[in-house]
Each structure stands twice: as C-alpha cells, then as structure tokens.
Image (cartoon, rainbow, N blue to C red; front, side, top):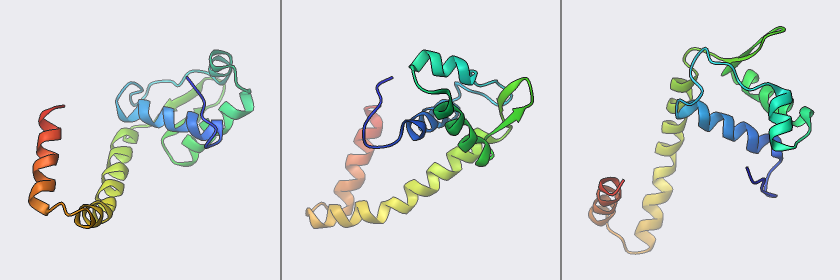
Length: 120
C-alpha cells in the first residue's frame, strides 16, 4: 500500500479497513489482522495501527475482545453502506449545479449516468 501525504496514515488505514468491510472482504464476526501484523506488513508504527483500529471501535464497526483481537460487528457493512448512500445523495445537488453551469441538461446527465452504469 502506498501512503499519501495528504492525510495521516492512520486515516488512510482506517479508510482501507472501511473499504474492506464495505466490499465484504471483512465480514461480520471476522477478525481483523492483529496490530502487530499490520504494523509489520505495512512497516508503520503499531500506535498508528492502534489509532486506526480505535476509530473503527469508536464508530461501532468493530469490537475489542480482550486477549483475542478485534472483530467486525454484525450490521457494520449495512451501517457503512447506508452512510455512504446518504453522503452520495447529499452530494447530488452540487453535481446537478456543476452540470448546469457546464450547460449539461438533466436528460444528458441521466443518459451519461446510464451509459456509465452499463459500462461497469
């Protein structure tokens, strides 16, 4: 994994774990890699990993099981998908405004979205 300079490493790692949960690679009840393992794999400080994991705990996505590790909670994926849907819907007015400023009508915007979806 390449670390970017635009945000702290723990936020990038947090985002990566969110992506893994959202896409189902880390399912409910599944254990996260240990702090030591992630630290060694990515050559980052273990406190950085712990901070990213704590953010996941604080958000109610994973739980600490004392002496055993961190585990994805039931409903974590659904919670994240709902949050992402809400954020996406809230961003639509800006997209429509920008399209209008560029002279792209609503029909053309819908057609472009349909084409993009078909190409997936």
